[in-house]
Length: 215
Image 1 (cartoon, rainbow, N blue to C red):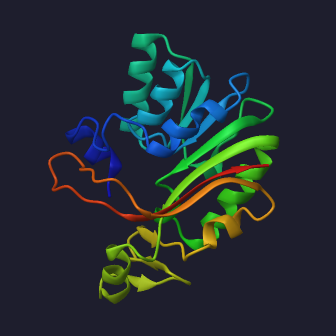
Image 2 (cartoon, rainbow, N blue to C red; image 1 turned 120 degrees about the horizontal axis):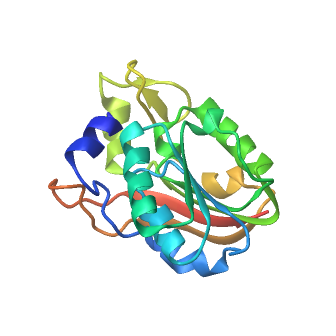
């Protein structure tokens, strides 16, 4: 997906409401520490938290995404700092984060980038910090379609690339908490997401894995 083009054409492509996971667990986050939103998109999670009184650092490689979130931040005078970059090149301007959001990112990364993401997340947190994660599972119908497609080629276990810079990676049952093996599992679920739609596309739902993990 070309996110600059998508965000330019459609306001609130992923909707305005935060993930249910965040709504259910944001009260567990430390309000005295900054939150890091990895892949802020058009801002539905960062804006929700900022309006609830959290200070947020929001990063995204999409220029359109950052411009959109920055405009809303300025308009409402919200405690959000925006950074146009990927997590690979991000340099925090704080000692550590009290919590990190990783929504919709794992499934578009190759395996080695997921490993780097986990290393970065650990280096940006301290004991007691919380990480909220959501990703696609191998039970999602798109997994079989991608696996059997001529367009997508295998790039490792349950990971695929189209050779043009796009990646799809799916989590097996139990894999997500294993990735956070030295964290305390506050919550872990594997199953279907609620029905939702992107812009004017038909309603859909995904097989997903999600969790809340505490260092």
